[in-house]
Image (cartoon, rainbow, N blue to C red; front, side, top):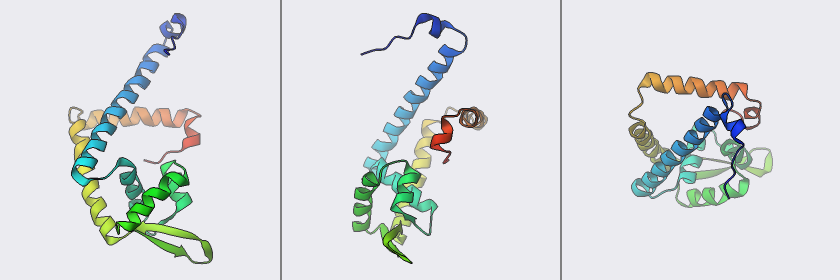
Length: 164
């Protein structure tokens, strides 16, 4: 089912170009994400969610509780648990008991996990750079500045936070 917005809304002032910006952002995000997913599968036999978990753990050398990891990734604990189980069995992640809290454990990268993620992160940066190669560095900075304005000024963005 397609929703058609009233012509007077779409024709008025800044509404139409703003909706177009949003649609273009969605489109390019999906394109980049699909390329990254395919490349992760082809080059590393892994998935984007697994890469995301490794990336989050890489930023916290001391490790994260599962609830902290879920919050950092903005997903449920259940979504992360299966990925962590497989990463532990692959020797890429280690569970560490939290001192003073018998119920809690930290998860953190092993040396193998750090090394494997470093290779993936390097490839990921290369892929994204290749995808966006037609953008000059100053254009990238301009787009980042524009998106930062949206992130700072819109009340809804306060709920999801800024995690770049």
